Length: 314
Ligand SMILES: C[S@@+](CC[C@H](N)C(=O)[O-])C[C@H]1O[C@@H](n2cnc3c(N)ncnc32)[C@H](O)[C@@H]1O
Image 1: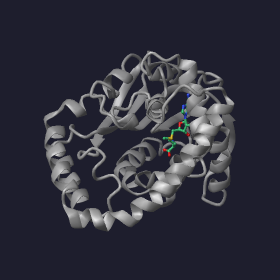
Image 2 (image 1 turned 90 degrees about the vertical axis):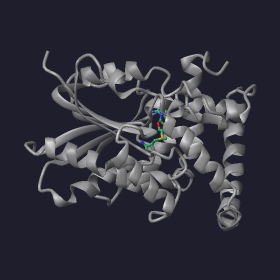
Image 3 (image 1 turned 90 degrees about the horizontal axis):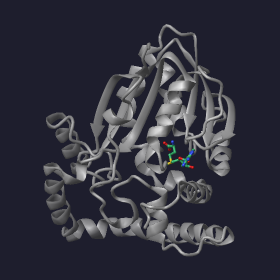
Image 4 (image 1 turned 30 degrees about the vertical axis):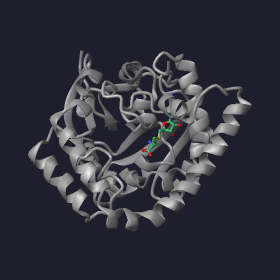
């Protein structure tokens, strides 16, 4: 039923959900601000080096959320003389953009403007961007391929599309995932670790309850009352294999399929080899170390991917 929902409902629910999530976002997603930064450093350096001939780069960040990507690039750029990045921030959620604008003040980001916009229907001049970034957004879109096609029009030849933190199609059917499931089972039964994790969990639980109360109240005001929390989550994370608590091994995205036709792939990379298991663990924990080793041994087998593609000359 969720898979057959109208694209307009998916977008409306995304806007409501993320309007509420804006105030909780950084606390609910510590993995983006810790684990992710380490994983995306290679991607950000690659982009900056490719653009080193430019003095100024105009970048559109779609699904900007609380501004992780512009802030991350500002940090990465600190060691480089040029280029300087100018950002246009877009999101379907007005509240996310308000939080991003406030957060990015005094963080070394030049923000040209913030636009409430559906990423699948971007209203910018053709060829107006040097770079397009989109982190952890495509799995929220009903038709990510349509978004990627629109990006071809927005970039000039040689412009870069940077897609990151997307669930890789096939991971939850792979051999590695079956091994991870075993590790997960053993891990969940280590009593002393579970006890150590409990206090953190309680804070997380009350925050989560408050979050869902607010989402349900806003959905009610929009006369959307027929969906359970699991169904709402599945609509929000439309292409995510783990959305709503149950596993959908046939959901996910394929980097090579996304950027086919009109694109030249600069580089792809996979990470998070232990699925969600290592994402929220402390930096030097055993699971994070195992995750790193797996990345070296099986470079293409991670659960998440990033890809940098270049608009090709016709
Ligand atoms: C998981 S958050 C990622 C935020 C940010 N890019 C980051 O890395 O932290 C997904 C973001 O995509 C936005 N979004 C969802 N559907 C969208 C759509 N159709 N058009 C534009 N933005 C959308 C949400 O409002 C939310 O801010």
